[in-house]
Length: 115
Image 1 (tube, rainbow, N blue to C red):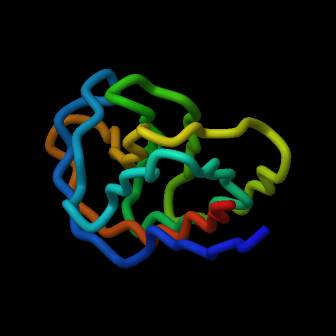
Image 2 (image 1 turned 180 degrees about the horizontal axis):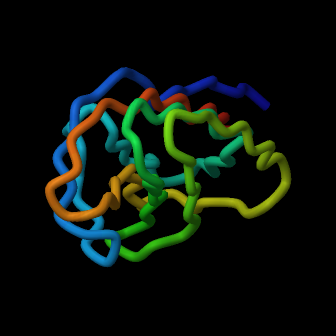
């Protein structure tokens, strides 16, 4: 079985709309899982430059799948191996939720494998 490593990653500026209003950060943080393959998230790493708590939200087909809170001026590393398979035909996206008006930058690295 052939596997393919994938990464949704980068450094992005944000302005919060409210913790209850996750928003897409950038079109680069979206991936369509091709039909006939299975995607599995391996880890999430993130960093937050702002002075307040934010959350990165892993969305599957427009529905929140996992929340990754990142403390003020802090970072997080969450191993995800064997948590859940993501079937072909799904769209995976990373959104950000932050207090209204909060400005900052977030470092995102979601590692995945498809097979």
